[in-house]
Length: 382
Image 1 (spheres, rainbow, N blue to C red):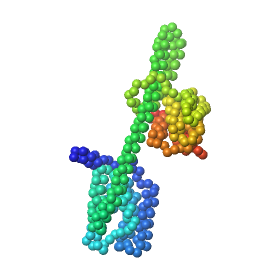
Image 2 (cartoon, rainbow, N blue to C red):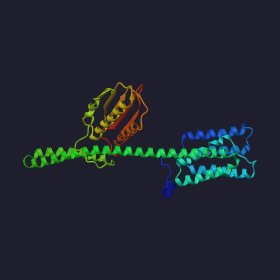
Image 3 (tube, helix red, strand yellow):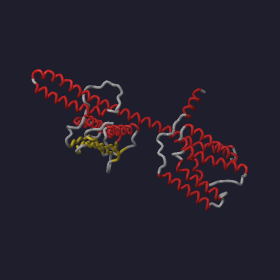
Image 4 (tube, rainbow, N blue to C red):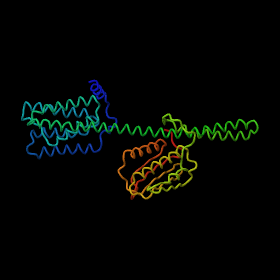
């Protein structure tokens, strides 16, 4: 009993779905189709009862379709409240019937209610939906028709709740992937900063000794310290907003563009990997340098695992003024990527975004799969 009470309380306090897209363009098309269907049916169908009223209700139903996502409870209250009123009147006056085939789209409203509304709204809305059903139950021929109608009405609501639950899990998983990518980036930035600080400390110690015997050499040492400090300050600014998981870092810079040739060593039946570096890539900042290596590494791993019948994987890094472009392309046939591959692409996209770059992944022209990332040379603070 306690578990049921806790579940009901959790549901009651559930906020509205955070990923509500509002009114979409195709909502207008759907509403227009329902309105046109109601008018056509009201005009051409010979057995429509209360023709003007039935047509007007069908048109109202179509217009309500536009607002079923932004205002799920309000639309349910209007549509099912009106239906309940008609059902009550029909119970007293059987000749008073409002009926069009197009009104079957009313099943979309319980779906929208469970998909987008808050917990309080869903409970109130479901009570109204089932109250409406009870007012119409007298029209059922037998028990099987009663049960069948209840099942048909419940399926959209259950489907909406399941889609909402799946979307929430997906959103949390994506958030975890983004957080992990930020932690990895922060670790690499921390390692780079620690490397620079170690160099500054060594140079400072040397400068103290040289100041006693060779002031000119001491000034040169101070210039080196200034340069290291400037680079360290830039890396620290880049690190703002990124998170760490508390692991102890190694005091050494991570791998970068110069290490990409190591990724060309493949084994077994894996397709050969070629690496091409074009332009001045020696002055790429450590954060961008490490990101290029990680992006290439992840892209090659995805190509080897998921590209069917691939005979090559080409990696190209090109300096383009103030940016560096990485392209990884294979000539295989893309298979249906599992969840892990999709999250890998999400991680690469997040890493690129943190550094102020652009990331794209998709089918290559002709055949194969292409991953492209463009990163600014100076990186970006998040």
